[in-house]
Structures are given as C-alpha cells and as structure tokens.
Image (cartoon, rainbow, N blue to C red; front, side):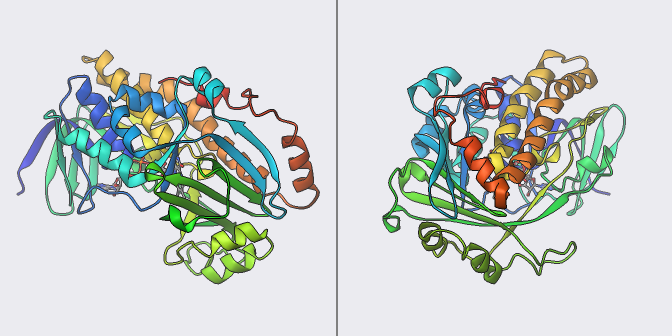
Length: 391
Ligand SMILES: Cc1cc2nc3c(=O)[nH]c(=O)nc-3n(C[C@H](O)[C@H](O)[C@H](O)COP(=O)(O)OP(=O)(O)OC[C@H]3O[C@@H](n4cnc5c(N)ncnc54)[C@H](O)[C@@H]3O)c2cc1C
C-alpha cells in the first residue's frame, strides 16, 4: 500500500487561485502543499484584465512590484458598437479612477501573472509544490480529508482547499450541480504589437459589442503583445458535442461587423476554441475541513473580466480567516464562506446579465447604446461595488 503523506494544509490545483492562496497562507506563517495535475505549472497564451479590487489582493500578497514589470496600465475601458464602429461609452481609468480605488486597472499576459505567483511560492520555504498529481479520490474524514492521486500518492490533511477550477472534483463533495454551457464560444490569442497599426489608444481595453457577439482587445507584456478575444453565439450549438462554434461560423457571424473588427479578426488563431461555461451560484462552499475557492467555488462568464480577480480576492479572505481561528478551522472556513458567497454570486449573475446586455440585437441594441452614451467617463457609480472592494 502507498505511503500516506500527512500535511497541515493541502491545496488541489496550481492555477492563479491555488498559487495565490498558498502565498497568502505562507505569508501568514502557515505551511502549505500544492498539487497540480499538469506536468508543469502554466497558463495559456492569452491576456488577463486585473481590476483594482484584485490589485489590492496582489498588493497584500507582496507581488505588485513584480507584476508592474510585466503589466500595462489601462487608460480607458471603451465600449464600441461592433456594427458601426462608433464609440458608445468609456470609463476613464486615469488619476481620478486610481485615487478613488487606490489601484490602477491593469492588463497583462496570463503566463506572466502565473510566473510571478509561482516564483514567489518557490521562494517561500513554507510552500511545497508538486506537478503530475491528479487528485482522483477525495474523502471527507470529519477532522481531516484524504486525497488519492492517479499515480497512487495519498495525502491526509487537516485542511483541504479545492482550487481545482470549473470542473472541480472537490466541489462534488458539496454540490451535485453541473457546469452550464452557453451557445457562446471564444477564440483568443496575442500578436506582436508591430502588427497592430490602425487603431489609436493602444493602452485602452476595447470591447466591441454587437448582436450575439463581442470582440475585446488590449495590450499585454509591457505593451509588446496585443491580446484579442472574439466571442460569438453558435447557431449549431448542441450540448454534449464539440461540433459547433467552428471557425467558419466565426467568420460568417463576424461578416456583419465593421471593417476594423473584421480585419482584426483575421489575426486571431483558429486552432483552439473556448466554450463559455459557468455555474449557478451556490451558498455552501465548505464541509468540515474542506473548502472551495476560485472557479471551483464560483465559475463565471468572462464578460466582466472578474473570474481571476475574484479568485485573488478569495485567496486573501481565506488565508485571513484560517489564520484568525487557528483552533477552530471549521468555523474559519464558514467565516470565509459568509464573507464571500454573496459577493461572488453578485459577480456571477452580473456577468450573465451583462452578456445579455452586450449581445442584444434590434431595438434593444439601439436602446442599449442610447442608455450607455450619456454616461460620463468619470461616473463610477455603476462600478463602485465591484472595483471599490478591498479584501
Ligand atoms: C476567454 C476567457 C477570458 C478571461 N478573462 C479574464 C479576465 O480578463 N480577468 C479575470 O479576472 N478573469 C478572466 N477569466 C477567468 C479566469 O481565467 C478564471 O476565473 C481563473 O483562471 C480561475 O482560476 P482558478 O485558479 O480558480 O482555476 P483554474 O485556472 O482552472 O486552475 C485550476 C487548476 O487546477 C488543476 N486541477 C484541476 N483538477 C485537478 C485535480 N483533480 N488534481 C490536481 N490538479 C487539478 C488544473 O490543472 C488547473 O491548473 C477569463 C476566462 C476566459 C475563459
């Protein structure tokens, strides 16, 4: 029989959420072990928007100086009509925005963020990290949890954190819900900035919105690369099949968009697509010594660019809750759940609602543009609840 490794805290999943949580706990003096099923820690080659609420989390993790070396500070968040190319509205992310929220809005390459978190974990000797560990069986033992990996490795831990993403195995102990797939699919990737010529305002986050589609652009990696994301609803969507949302449908759907969007679309890779998937919010994230965080707890549609931001917020609140009640871990996990579940439910449901709003057609599209246009660039009332949060 395989030897059982005893651990005080085990995190399943070495994505942005898992590594940030390891760092938060280690910074507070706790020993943590992270297991990741992939052969190496890594992220896909695309961009990430990080709003001020998550910048506060990165600041508390002590990694902001490193993050700043890779990021671009966004000047504006701009919405344009994808059909006419006309600007509808924008948020000015300049001095007033930064003073209000205490941090800027940044954009960066996903792998740069993961590398910063990973290196910070590797430099902290309270954190141990293992790859090629696929957790296949998880048992709740009341005062501990047991995890068995595909290669036979077994861990018994006083506290188990499920940071294992959208299709979390840990979540199955707490809920029998299933991921909810939209008929929407995303294509994304980066290209050298030298290939981007036409468009002014290259330090903006730009979102073209149109009938059942949106198209996002922003710079990453100190402005050396330009990130693009093209999203649309497939007419061929069928659950339990992968034969929908294909590149031919992408081009056909985008034929209605303005010249700028159509030309930009030509520079997006077609080799991989990401179906848009979330889950309905749940209120129970913890049982005994087991707890969820990040996408495992609250996967959301990416329409307001907050999934990783919410995982970063979780990492701080969870670490603080655990450290505050060293003798009562069950209560600590409940405190974390109470502090987080309504906020993240609001973000999940807002992302769904914003999808409807962005993708509307016909009179609804005209009405949406008419409602958004009068907004002043320094009117922050709609976003205060989201960006004004400090974990
Ligand atoms: C197109 C798109 C654009 C996005 N843009 C943004 C954005 O701009 N801003 C933003 O904040 N968010 C954005 N998001 C959301 C963001 O990517 C996710 O919310 C975030 O990556 C979740 O991090 P996580 O660590 O919780 O989960 P994941 O990144 O899914 O990490 C989970 C990890 O657990 C590992 N794992 C899973 N199961 C096991 C197991 N059984 N054993 C061991 N390891 C396991 C996985 O290999 C993985 O490494 C976007 C998402 C998409 C799809």
